[in-house]
Image 1 (cartoon, one colour):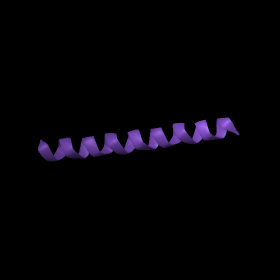
Image 2: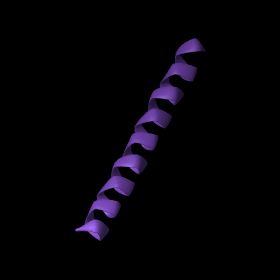
Image 3: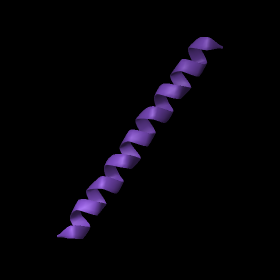
Image 4: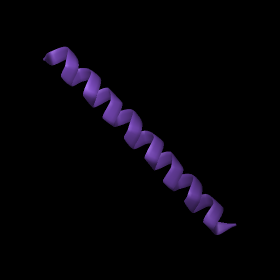
Length: 32
């Protein structure tokens, strides 16, 4: 269970970082 939980948390962190990057990119483009 510990291994699966670690993998799931890593996936969630990666997805959150990707979403944050997309939101940041849109925000930067919005200024231009």
